Length: 447
Ligand SMILES: Nc1nc2c(ncn2[C@@H]2O[C@H](COP(=O)(O)OP(=O)(O)OP(=O)(O)O)[C@@H](O)[C@H]2O)c(=O)[nH]1
Ligand SMILES: [Mg+2]
Image (cartoon, rainbow, N blue to C red; front, side, top):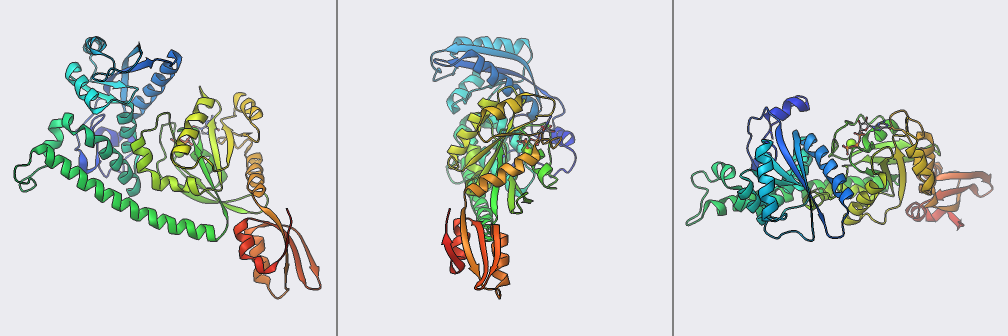
Protein backbone atom coordinates (compact mmCIF):
# COMPACT_ATOMS: atom_id res chain seq x y z
CA UNK A 1 0.00 0.00 0.00
CA UNK A 2 1.44 3.36 -0.92
CA UNK A 3 1.43 6.44 1.27
CA UNK A 4 -0.71 8.33 -1.19
CA UNK A 5 -2.70 11.33 -0.12
CA UNK A 6 -4.58 11.75 -3.38
CA UNK A 7 -8.30 11.06 -3.66
CA UNK A 8 -9.40 7.45 -3.79
CA UNK A 9 -9.65 7.27 -7.57
CA UNK A 10 -6.02 8.28 -8.02
CA UNK A 11 -4.79 5.98 -5.31
CA UNK A 12 -6.54 3.03 -6.83
CA UNK A 13 -4.69 3.21 -10.10
CA UNK A 14 -1.42 2.87 -8.18
CA UNK A 15 -2.57 -0.04 -6.10
CA UNK A 16 -1.92 -3.72 -6.39
CA UNK A 17 -4.31 -5.55 -8.67
CA UNK A 18 -7.62 -6.86 -7.49
CA UNK A 19 -6.99 -9.55 -4.91
CA UNK A 20 -3.36 -8.53 -4.60
CA UNK A 21 -2.44 -7.65 -1.09
CA UNK A 22 -0.74 -4.43 -0.13
CA UNK A 23 1.36 -3.75 2.93
CA UNK A 24 4.70 -5.42 3.27
CA UNK A 25 3.33 -8.81 2.32
CA UNK A 26 2.61 -7.94 -1.26
CA UNK A 27 3.83 -5.60 -3.91
CA UNK A 28 2.49 -2.87 -6.09
CA UNK A 29 1.41 -3.54 -9.61
CA UNK A 30 0.60 -0.61 -11.84
CA UNK A 31 -3.08 -1.02 -12.54
CA UNK A 32 -5.06 1.29 -14.73
CA UNK A 33 -7.81 -1.00 -16.02
CA UNK A 34 -10.80 -2.44 -14.24
CA UNK A 35 -10.68 -6.18 -13.92
CA UNK A 36 -13.46 -8.28 -15.46
CA UNK A 37 -15.09 -10.66 -13.04
CA UNK A 38 -17.36 -13.72 -13.26
CA UNK A 39 -19.24 -14.30 -9.99
CA UNK A 40 -20.45 -17.72 -8.85
CA UNK A 41 -23.21 -18.41 -6.33
CA UNK A 42 -24.23 -21.84 -5.07
CA UNK A 43 -27.54 -22.81 -3.47
CA UNK A 44 -26.84 -25.69 -1.11
CA UNK A 45 -29.35 -28.15 0.28
CA UNK A 46 -31.90 -26.36 2.46
CA UNK A 47 -31.02 -22.92 1.08
CA UNK A 48 -33.17 -20.69 -1.12
CA UNK A 49 -32.22 -19.48 -4.58
CA UNK A 50 -33.49 -15.96 -3.94
CA UNK A 51 -31.07 -15.75 -1.02
CA UNK A 52 -28.26 -16.90 -3.31
CA UNK A 53 -29.30 -14.24 -5.79
CA UNK A 54 -29.36 -11.53 -3.13
CA UNK A 55 -25.91 -12.69 -2.05
CA UNK A 56 -24.66 -12.32 -5.62
CA UNK A 57 -26.21 -8.84 -5.87
CA UNK A 58 -24.27 -7.82 -2.79
CA UNK A 59 -21.10 -9.53 -4.07
CA UNK A 60 -21.48 -7.43 -7.22
CA UNK A 61 -21.51 -4.29 -5.05
CA UNK A 62 -18.46 -5.50 -3.18
CA UNK A 63 -16.62 -6.23 -6.45
CA UNK A 64 -17.55 -2.79 -7.75
CA UNK A 65 -16.34 -1.13 -4.55
CA UNK A 66 -13.07 -3.04 -4.88
CA UNK A 67 -12.69 -1.49 -8.33
CA UNK A 68 -13.69 -4.28 -10.73
CA UNK A 69 -16.66 -5.08 -12.98
CA UNK A 70 -18.92 -8.14 -12.93
CA UNK A 71 -19.32 -9.27 -16.55
CA UNK A 72 -21.13 -12.58 -15.94
CA UNK A 73 -22.86 -14.42 -13.14
CA UNK A 74 -23.25 -18.18 -12.62
CA UNK A 75 -25.68 -19.92 -10.29
CA UNK A 76 -25.68 -23.55 -9.27
CA UNK A 77 -27.79 -25.76 -7.05
CA UNK A 78 -26.13 -28.70 -5.33
CA UNK A 79 -26.61 -30.81 -2.20
CA UNK A 80 -23.19 -30.14 -0.70
CA UNK A 81 -19.94 -28.48 -1.74
CA UNK A 82 -17.55 -30.67 -3.71
CA UNK A 83 -14.47 -31.00 -1.47
CA UNK A 84 -12.05 -30.55 -4.39
CA UNK A 85 -13.67 -27.81 -6.45
CA UNK A 86 -16.76 -26.66 -4.52
CA UNK A 87 -18.89 -26.68 -7.71
CA UNK A 88 -17.72 -30.02 -9.16
CA UNK A 89 -15.46 -30.69 -12.12
CA UNK A 90 -18.15 -30.43 -14.80
CA UNK A 91 -19.44 -27.07 -13.59
CA UNK A 92 -15.88 -25.83 -13.20
CA UNK A 93 -15.20 -26.61 -16.87
CA UNK A 94 -18.38 -24.75 -17.78
CA UNK A 95 -17.27 -21.70 -15.79
CA UNK A 96 -13.88 -21.87 -17.52
CA UNK A 97 -15.56 -21.77 -20.95
CA UNK A 98 -17.77 -18.88 -19.90
CA UNK A 99 -14.80 -16.96 -18.51
CA UNK A 100 -13.01 -17.45 -21.84
CA UNK A 101 -16.08 -16.26 -23.73
CA UNK A 102 -16.57 -13.05 -21.75
CA UNK A 103 -12.83 -12.49 -21.46
CA UNK A 104 -12.85 -12.46 -17.65
CA UNK A 105 -9.71 -12.02 -15.58
CA UNK A 106 -10.95 -13.51 -12.35
CA UNK A 107 -13.69 -15.78 -10.99
CA UNK A 108 -15.13 -14.79 -7.61
CA UNK A 109 -17.17 -17.19 -5.45
CA UNK A 110 -19.76 -15.95 -2.99
CA UNK A 111 -18.78 -18.82 -0.69
CA UNK A 112 -15.57 -19.21 1.23
CA UNK A 113 -13.24 -21.54 -0.68
CA UNK A 114 -10.80 -23.83 1.11
CA UNK A 115 -7.16 -23.30 0.12
CA UNK A 116 -7.27 -26.62 -1.78
CA UNK A 117 -10.46 -25.69 -3.67
CA UNK A 118 -9.00 -22.34 -4.62
CA UNK A 119 -5.80 -24.01 -5.86
CA UNK A 120 -7.66 -26.65 -7.90
CA UNK A 121 -10.07 -24.13 -9.41
CA UNK A 122 -7.25 -21.86 -10.53
CA UNK A 123 -5.69 -24.81 -12.34
CA UNK A 124 -8.97 -25.53 -14.15
CA UNK A 125 -9.84 -21.88 -14.86
CA UNK A 126 -6.29 -20.89 -15.84
CA UNK A 127 -7.04 -17.65 -14.02
CA UNK A 128 -7.38 -16.35 -10.48
CA UNK A 129 -10.15 -17.76 -8.30
CA UNK A 130 -11.13 -15.70 -5.28
CA UNK A 131 -13.84 -15.83 -2.66
CA UNK A 132 -15.99 -13.21 -0.98
CA UNK A 133 -13.50 -12.99 1.87
CA UNK A 134 -10.67 -11.98 -0.46
CA UNK A 135 -12.83 -9.24 -2.00
CA UNK A 136 -13.79 -7.83 1.41
CA UNK A 137 -10.15 -7.93 2.51
CA UNK A 138 -9.23 -6.08 -0.67
CA UNK A 139 -11.73 -3.30 0.06
CA UNK A 140 -10.55 -3.00 3.65
CA UNK A 141 -6.97 -2.74 2.39
CA UNK A 142 -7.94 0.09 0.04
CA UNK A 143 -9.85 1.97 2.76
CA UNK A 144 -7.42 1.60 5.65
CA UNK A 145 -5.82 4.95 6.45
CA UNK A 146 -4.76 4.97 10.09
CA UNK A 147 -1.74 3.00 11.25
CA UNK A 148 -3.97 0.84 13.37
CA UNK A 149 -6.41 0.21 10.54
CA UNK A 150 -3.60 -0.78 8.21
CA UNK A 151 -2.09 -3.10 10.80
CA UNK A 152 -5.45 -4.75 11.42
CA UNK A 153 -6.12 -5.30 7.74
CA UNK A 154 -2.64 -6.61 7.08
CA UNK A 155 -2.98 -9.03 9.97
CA UNK A 156 -6.26 -10.32 8.54
CA UNK A 157 -4.64 -10.69 5.11
CA UNK A 158 -1.77 -12.71 6.54
CA UNK A 159 -4.17 -15.00 8.39
CA UNK A 160 -6.03 -15.50 5.12
CA UNK A 161 -2.88 -15.99 3.14
CA UNK A 162 -0.90 -18.35 5.36
CA UNK A 163 -2.86 -21.52 4.61
CA UNK A 164 -2.89 -20.58 0.91
CA UNK A 165 0.84 -20.13 0.43
CA UNK A 166 1.11 -23.22 -1.75
CA UNK A 167 -1.04 -21.79 -4.50
CA UNK A 168 0.29 -18.30 -4.48
CA UNK A 169 3.74 -19.08 -5.91
CA UNK A 170 5.38 -16.40 -8.02
CA UNK A 171 4.97 -12.86 -6.83
CA UNK A 172 5.63 -13.34 -3.17
CA UNK A 173 8.65 -15.54 -3.83
CA UNK A 174 10.33 -12.98 -6.02
CA UNK A 175 10.05 -10.43 -3.28
CA UNK A 176 11.03 -12.45 -0.26
CA UNK A 177 14.21 -14.36 0.24
CA UNK A 178 16.98 -12.04 -0.76
CA UNK A 179 20.51 -13.21 -0.05
CA UNK A 180 20.83 -14.32 3.53
CA UNK A 181 17.15 -14.75 4.31
CA UNK A 182 17.13 -18.45 3.58
CA UNK A 183 18.27 -21.02 6.16
CA UNK A 184 20.24 -24.16 5.19
CA UNK A 185 18.10 -26.56 3.20
CA UNK A 186 15.09 -24.26 3.36
CA UNK A 187 12.73 -24.06 0.43
CA UNK A 188 11.37 -20.76 -0.82
CA UNK A 189 7.99 -21.72 0.63
CA UNK A 190 9.45 -22.09 4.11
CA UNK A 191 11.16 -18.73 3.81
CA UNK A 192 7.88 -17.09 2.77
CA UNK A 193 6.02 -18.76 5.58
CA UNK A 194 8.61 -17.77 8.13
CA UNK A 195 8.55 -14.20 6.91
CA UNK A 196 4.75 -14.02 7.14
CA UNK A 197 4.75 -15.54 10.61
CA UNK A 198 7.32 -13.02 11.79
CA UNK A 199 5.32 -10.17 10.33
CA UNK A 200 2.15 -11.55 11.91
CA UNK A 201 3.73 -11.68 15.36
CA UNK A 202 4.98 -8.13 14.95
CA UNK A 203 1.51 -6.89 13.99
CA UNK A 204 -0.14 -8.74 16.87
CA UNK A 205 2.30 -7.12 19.27
CA UNK A 206 1.77 -3.67 17.73
CA UNK A 207 -2.02 -4.02 18.00
CA UNK A 208 -1.73 -5.26 21.58
CA UNK A 209 0.03 -2.02 22.50
CA UNK A 210 -2.64 0.10 20.80
CA UNK A 211 -5.26 -1.87 22.63
CA UNK A 212 -3.74 -1.27 26.04
CA UNK A 213 -3.59 2.49 25.34
CA UNK A 214 -7.23 2.36 24.34
CA UNK A 215 -8.10 0.45 27.51
CA UNK A 216 -6.53 3.24 29.57
CA UNK A 217 -8.51 5.86 27.66
CA UNK A 218 -11.76 4.03 28.03
CA UNK A 219 -11.09 3.50 31.75
CA UNK A 220 -10.56 7.22 32.07
CA UNK A 221 -13.85 7.82 30.27
CA UNK A 222 -15.61 5.40 32.52
CA UNK A 223 -14.19 7.11 35.58
CA UNK A 224 -15.65 10.36 34.28
CA UNK A 225 -18.83 8.28 34.50
CA UNK A 226 -20.43 9.52 31.33
CA UNK A 227 -22.22 6.74 29.56
CA UNK A 228 -20.90 5.48 26.27
CA UNK A 229 -22.95 4.75 23.20
CA UNK A 230 -21.62 2.79 20.22
CA UNK A 231 -23.11 3.37 16.79
CA UNK A 232 -23.15 -0.01 15.05
CA UNK A 233 -24.79 -1.40 11.95
CA UNK A 234 -24.55 -2.77 8.46
CA UNK A 235 -22.08 -1.11 6.13
CA UNK A 236 -23.47 1.95 4.32
CA UNK A 237 -26.44 2.22 6.75
CA UNK A 238 -25.53 5.82 7.61
CA UNK A 239 -23.62 5.43 10.89
CA UNK A 240 -21.03 8.11 10.14
CA UNK A 241 -23.67 10.47 8.75
CA UNK A 242 -25.57 10.05 12.01
CA UNK A 243 -22.52 10.75 14.20
CA UNK A 244 -21.83 13.85 12.11
CA UNK A 245 -25.44 14.92 12.49
CA UNK A 246 -25.37 14.43 16.28
CA UNK A 247 -21.93 15.98 16.83
CA UNK A 248 -19.56 17.92 14.64
CA UNK A 249 -17.40 14.84 14.20
CA UNK A 250 -16.54 15.51 10.55
CA UNK A 251 -16.20 11.78 9.79
CA UNK A 252 -15.94 10.79 6.13
CA UNK A 253 -19.24 9.54 4.75
CA UNK A 254 -19.52 7.99 1.35
CA UNK A 255 -21.85 5.90 -0.73
CA UNK A 256 -19.23 3.19 -0.52
CA UNK A 257 -19.00 -0.01 1.47
CA UNK A 258 -16.67 0.05 4.48
CA UNK A 259 -15.90 3.77 4.21
CA UNK A 260 -15.19 3.77 7.94
CA UNK A 261 -12.61 1.46 9.46
CA UNK A 262 -11.49 3.52 12.45
CA UNK A 263 -13.54 4.23 15.52
CA UNK A 264 -14.25 7.92 16.17
CA UNK A 265 -15.53 9.06 19.56
CA UNK A 266 -17.23 12.39 20.29
CA UNK A 267 -19.03 13.89 23.27
CA UNK A 268 -22.73 14.23 22.82
CA UNK A 269 -25.08 16.33 24.97
CA UNK A 270 -28.51 14.78 25.51
CA UNK A 271 -31.71 16.80 25.99
CA UNK A 272 -31.85 15.70 29.65
CA UNK A 273 -28.55 17.49 30.25
CA UNK A 274 -26.33 14.41 30.47
CA UNK A 275 -23.25 14.03 28.35
CA UNK A 276 -22.43 10.71 26.71
CA UNK A 277 -19.59 9.50 24.52
CA UNK A 278 -20.73 8.37 21.07
CA UNK A 279 -18.49 6.23 18.89
CA UNK A 280 -18.80 5.52 15.18
CA UNK A 281 -17.57 2.03 14.26
CA UNK A 282 -16.67 -0.16 11.29
CA UNK A 283 -19.68 -1.52 9.41
CA UNK A 284 -20.64 -5.17 9.26
CA UNK A 285 -21.74 -7.30 6.33
CA UNK A 286 -23.24 -10.73 5.79
CA UNK A 287 -20.56 -13.37 6.33
CA UNK A 288 -17.95 -10.90 7.52
CA UNK A 289 -14.61 -12.75 7.26
CA UNK A 290 -13.60 -14.18 10.63
CA UNK A 291 -10.02 -13.05 9.99
CA UNK A 292 -11.28 -9.45 9.97
CA UNK A 293 -13.45 -9.87 13.05
CA UNK A 294 -10.41 -11.29 14.82
CA UNK A 295 -8.05 -8.54 13.62
CA UNK A 296 -10.52 -5.75 14.44
CA UNK A 297 -11.09 -6.94 17.98
CA UNK A 298 -9.25 -4.00 19.55
CA UNK A 299 -11.38 -1.51 17.59
CA UNK A 300 -14.51 -3.42 18.49
CA UNK A 301 -13.77 -3.27 22.22
CA UNK A 302 -15.71 0.00 22.34
CA UNK A 303 -18.77 -1.94 21.25
CA UNK A 304 -18.39 -4.53 24.00
CA UNK A 305 -17.81 -1.83 26.63
CA UNK A 306 -20.69 0.40 25.51
CA UNK A 307 -23.69 1.01 27.77
CA UNK A 308 -25.99 1.15 24.75
CA UNK A 309 -25.73 0.20 21.09
CA UNK A 310 -27.39 2.53 18.62
CA UNK A 311 -28.01 0.01 15.85
CA UNK A 312 -28.44 1.95 12.60
CA UNK A 313 -30.37 0.14 9.87
CA UNK A 314 -30.81 1.25 6.26
CA UNK A 315 -34.60 1.31 6.48
CA UNK A 316 -34.87 2.04 2.76
CA UNK A 317 -32.52 -0.78 1.73
CA UNK A 318 -33.44 -4.05 0.01
CA UNK A 319 -33.43 -6.24 3.14
CA UNK A 320 -33.38 -4.30 6.42
CA UNK A 321 -34.42 -7.30 8.54
CA UNK A 322 -31.70 -9.48 7.01
CA UNK A 323 -29.20 -6.70 7.72
CA UNK A 324 -30.29 -6.62 11.36
CA UNK A 325 -29.78 -10.38 11.68
CA UNK A 326 -26.33 -10.19 10.07
CA UNK A 327 -25.25 -7.39 12.42
CA UNK A 328 -26.57 -9.19 15.51
CA UNK A 329 -24.69 -12.32 14.47
CA UNK A 330 -21.39 -10.43 14.38
CA UNK A 331 -22.24 -8.70 17.66
CA UNK A 332 -22.66 -12.09 19.31
CA UNK A 333 -19.42 -13.27 17.75
CA UNK A 334 -17.43 -10.41 19.31
CA UNK A 335 -19.11 -10.86 22.69
CA UNK A 336 -21.42 -7.84 22.54
CA UNK A 337 -24.63 -9.87 22.21
CA UNK A 338 -25.95 -8.76 25.60
CA UNK A 339 -25.32 -5.01 25.33
CA UNK A 340 -28.70 -3.19 25.23
CA UNK A 341 -29.65 -2.11 21.72
CA UNK A 342 -31.72 0.75 20.33
CA UNK A 343 -32.86 0.14 16.74
CA UNK A 344 -32.73 3.17 14.45
CA UNK A 345 -34.27 2.90 10.99
CA UNK A 346 -32.41 5.45 8.90
CA UNK A 347 -32.99 7.09 5.51
CA UNK A 348 -36.58 8.08 6.33
CA UNK A 349 -36.34 11.04 3.94
CA UNK A 350 -38.64 10.41 1.01
CA UNK A 351 -39.30 6.81 2.03
CA UNK A 352 -42.13 5.41 4.14
CA UNK A 353 -40.47 2.12 4.95
CA UNK A 354 -38.24 3.24 7.87
CA UNK A 355 -41.25 4.66 9.76
CA UNK A 356 -43.22 1.49 9.09
CA UNK A 357 -40.36 -0.65 10.37
CA UNK A 358 -39.89 1.52 13.46
CA UNK A 359 -43.59 1.17 14.28
CA UNK A 360 -43.24 -2.61 14.19
CA UNK A 361 -40.25 -2.73 16.57
CA UNK A 362 -40.78 -1.78 20.20
CA UNK A 363 -38.71 1.23 21.24
CA UNK A 364 -37.29 1.77 17.74
CA UNK A 365 -37.13 5.17 16.03
CA UNK A 366 -37.07 6.27 12.40
CA UNK A 367 -34.69 9.05 11.40
CA UNK A 368 -33.03 10.67 8.48
CA UNK A 369 -29.42 11.30 9.35
CA UNK A 370 -29.26 13.30 6.14
CA UNK A 371 -32.05 15.81 6.89
CA UNK A 372 -32.09 15.55 10.68
CA UNK A 373 -35.72 14.41 10.72
CA UNK A 374 -36.43 12.27 13.80
CA UNK A 375 -33.08 13.01 15.38
CA UNK A 376 -34.59 14.88 18.37
CA UNK A 377 -36.74 11.85 19.12
CA UNK A 378 -33.66 9.66 18.83
CA UNK A 379 -31.76 11.77 21.37
CA UNK A 380 -34.70 11.53 23.76
CA UNK A 381 -34.83 7.77 23.24
CA UNK A 382 -31.11 7.41 23.94
CA UNK A 383 -31.51 9.39 27.17
CA UNK A 384 -34.56 7.35 28.20
CA UNK A 385 -32.85 4.05 27.54
CA UNK A 386 -29.76 5.05 29.50
CA UNK A 387 -31.84 6.41 32.37
CA UNK A 388 -33.82 3.22 32.53
CA UNK A 389 -30.57 1.52 33.46
CA UNK A 390 -30.06 3.74 36.48
CA UNK A 391 -31.55 3.99 39.93
CA UNK A 392 -33.15 6.95 41.67
CA UNK A 393 -31.11 7.78 44.75
CA UNK A 394 -31.65 10.25 47.61
CA UNK A 395 -28.62 12.15 48.84
CA UNK A 396 -27.99 14.69 51.59
CA UNK A 397 -24.97 16.85 50.87
CA UNK A 398 -23.63 19.47 53.34
CA UNK A 399 -23.79 23.01 51.96
CA UNK A 400 -20.03 23.27 52.29
CA UNK A 401 -19.60 20.51 49.74
CA UNK A 402 -20.33 22.31 46.50
CA UNK A 403 -17.89 19.94 44.81
CA UNK A 404 -20.05 16.93 45.68
CA UNK A 405 -23.21 18.68 44.45
CA UNK A 406 -21.43 19.41 41.22
CA UNK A 407 -20.37 15.80 41.01
CA UNK A 408 -23.97 14.61 41.39
CA UNK A 409 -25.04 16.95 38.60
CA UNK A 410 -22.22 15.80 36.37
CA UNK A 411 -22.61 12.09 36.88
CA UNK A 412 -26.34 11.75 37.10
CA UNK A 413 -29.58 13.47 36.41
CA UNK A 414 -30.88 15.52 39.31
CA UNK A 415 -34.67 15.22 39.56
CA UNK A 416 -35.38 17.26 42.70
CA UNK A 417 -33.17 19.46 44.83
CA UNK A 418 -34.19 21.16 48.06
CA UNK A 419 -32.35 22.97 50.84
CA UNK A 420 -32.95 21.43 54.26
CA UNK A 421 -31.40 22.06 57.67
CA UNK A 422 -28.86 19.28 57.26
CA UNK A 423 -27.79 20.35 53.80
CA UNK A 424 -28.90 20.02 50.20
CA UNK A 425 -31.29 17.14 49.69
CA UNK A 426 -30.93 15.75 46.20
CA UNK A 427 -32.92 13.12 44.38
CA UNK A 428 -30.97 11.92 41.37
CA UNK A 429 -30.73 9.12 38.86
CA UNK A 430 -27.34 7.51 39.25
CA UNK A 431 -25.84 4.38 37.83
CA UNK A 432 -24.44 1.84 40.26
CA UNK A 433 -20.87 3.05 39.99
CA UNK A 434 -21.75 6.67 40.71
CA UNK A 435 -23.99 5.65 43.57
CA UNK A 436 -21.08 3.68 45.05
CA UNK A 437 -18.73 6.65 44.68
CA UNK A 438 -21.23 8.94 46.39
CA UNK A 439 -22.25 6.40 49.02
CA UNK A 440 -21.08 8.67 51.85
CA UNK A 441 -23.94 11.09 51.03
CA UNK A 442 -26.63 8.57 50.12
CA UNK A 443 -29.60 8.64 52.47
CA UNK A 444 -31.73 6.02 50.77
CA UNK A 445 -31.89 4.24 47.49
CA UNK A 446 -35.39 4.07 46.12
CA UNK A 447 -36.17 2.98 42.61
N1 LIG B 1 -31.19 9.25 1.70
C1 LIG B 1 -30.40 9.13 2.74
N2 LIG B 1 -29.13 8.76 2.56
C2 LIG B 1 -28.35 8.67 3.67
C3 LIG B 1 -28.83 8.94 4.96
N3 LIG B 1 -27.83 8.73 5.84
C4 LIG B 1 -26.75 8.36 5.11
N4 LIG B 1 -27.06 8.32 3.81
C5 LIG B 1 -26.15 7.98 2.70
O1 LIG B 1 -25.75 6.63 2.82
C6 LIG B 1 -24.38 6.49 2.41
C7 LIG B 1 -23.58 5.87 3.50
O2 LIG B 1 -23.51 6.75 4.59
P1 LIG B 1 -22.36 6.59 5.69
O3 LIG B 1 -22.70 7.51 6.81
O4 LIG B 1 -21.01 6.69 5.07
O5 LIG B 1 -22.64 5.09 6.12
P2 LIG B 1 -21.83 4.18 7.16
O6 LIG B 1 -22.85 3.36 7.88
O7 LIG B 1 -20.94 5.03 8.01
O8 LIG B 1 -21.02 3.26 6.15
P3 LIG B 1 -19.59 2.51 6.33
O9 LIG B 1 -18.71 3.35 7.18
O10 LIG B 1 -19.13 2.40 4.93
O11 LIG B 1 -19.92 1.18 6.93
C8 LIG B 1 -23.90 7.90 2.03
O12 LIG B 1 -24.02 8.05 0.66
C9 LIG B 1 -24.87 8.79 2.78
O13 LIG B 1 -25.01 10.03 2.16
C10 LIG B 1 -30.21 9.35 5.11
O14 LIG B 1 -30.72 9.61 6.18
N5 LIG B 1 -30.93 9.41 3.96
MG1 LIG C 1 -18.97 5.06 8.19
